[in-house]
Length: 266
Image 1: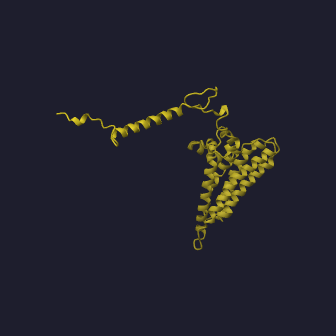
Image 2: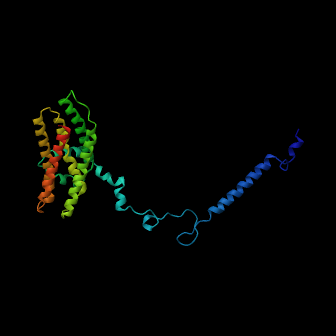
Image 3: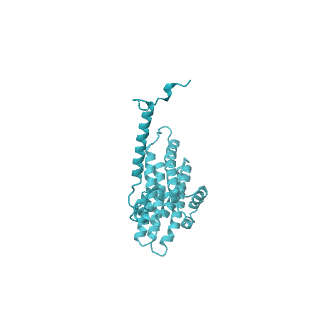
């Protein structure tokens, strides 16, 4: 039998579920209508009439985008230096071998299309650790009884080698610019960085506990490095009566070699 109470409507009763659901649906409808109305109101477009949808962001060419990067901002941007580290192992090895040839005067021609700063950083850092560690080892071989590890070798080597590899090419660049000769600072840094590679090899040979051989080794290494630098700088000084610049570069390379011998391998 059919229940007679089932036909009685309960929507009018207080607290009944259908009444609550109806009120919630009614509120949702009002919120949706309000949001739809607010979404239909947009700022004026460039044409002067209201449009529907998002406005197109202005590009940098239209004057509404970010300003272009200036030259000074590019100096402090790491991405602008990635082109100077675009080298592989074969290229680096080829340039290292070229630095061992004192008669090689075409180093600038080899790196003209792709000068790198990787050699400057890698060779300088390796030389710092080589002369600091091997210098302590050489003093141990000479005086074992009164030997102690000299920590100051590391700071002295870092300040000397990094300062030389950065400041000396920078000074020659500004000097040649002042004298009216065009030069490239990145190419100077690249060439001087690879010129220090011979001192890494000679630092291992300086472990020989014979003072006469040590002096012969460091003088030969300094001569090879100086000839490499001088033969490549000759392209900037030939015909310009700037031989004093070439002589200064040779003297500085010899001075660096003598400093390494006297301070780290006494």
